[in-house]
Image 1 (cartoon, rainbow, N blue to C red):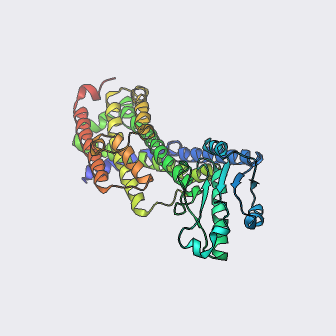
Image 2 (spheres, rainbow, N blue to C red; image 1 turned 180 degrees about the horizontal axis):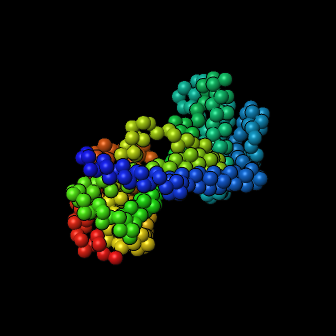
Image 3 (cartoon, helix red, strand yellow; image 1 turned 90 degrees about the vertical axis):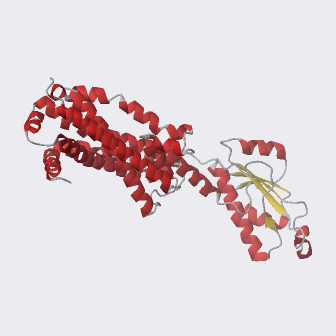
Length: 399
């Protein structure tokens, strides 16, 4: 890095960090506001759910053996053992908000569990539940653990296995249903977080780039730099690198506010997962993607600011890009995932796809390298174009 670029970065740092109000509004306030808003929303939802009575967990039991009645009746479940239609219960389970579960024991369960018969054909206990309902999923979890504890305490005379009654039936080897709900939440976060991060990065770039370039044009200080024996390419790179540092700080602040408050917001829905489960390699990959994205966004906004004659005009030119950023960030929500390597060649969209891969813990080094390389190449082209704009006296000295 040349001496002139370092001097430009120092000048920009002195201007930025010398303005305490700008530091607070651009770096501290975004993350603080996001943390407070998300935290208060999460606590409000949790308080509302605590005040609402939890729907009773209703479990229908078919052919329940008398030997298991005392054990099952001791569970915090409302058990119904007779007077119901199995087909109607299965229809209830398929309803999204249903908290119903169904346990089907084989006829003469204890009799057919004799060791000589269990060795040839272990009887199956069919448990149907709705994985979309936490009440129903917890009932399944409680029943499975209770029956397995009974099996191990007596002897392995029976087995709990799946039967293809519906899509709501799980096998004994499947994961905990609450883990499945948590996995669904993580999948949702992998679609929503890239959009939030991209919007925060763009907002950070908007907060610093127009005031640095269009603001200097408006104040006339850019003319002082242009008349000095300074390479315009160094001026362009000095502006892009220094502004990217400030925008990155603003984006990191916003990301920290989101990541710190999300566990409380998620726990309001009854799921307790941590957003800090990602290994260091994933966090490093996220940092590289974010950095390359910020460089590209700063380069684009700097070009637009160079074409404007005032900060107000530059802000009005850049504002419509927010809708583009929102649309690109929402692409994974609408199913535009990275099934094709060609999608990682599309600027900005490739950053969203990489962040989606990182948060879903499915990083592909090849596509990650392609996306970062494309962003850096675009940044180099933007620096070249910004240099051409700095060389144009008609553009730089226009009012």
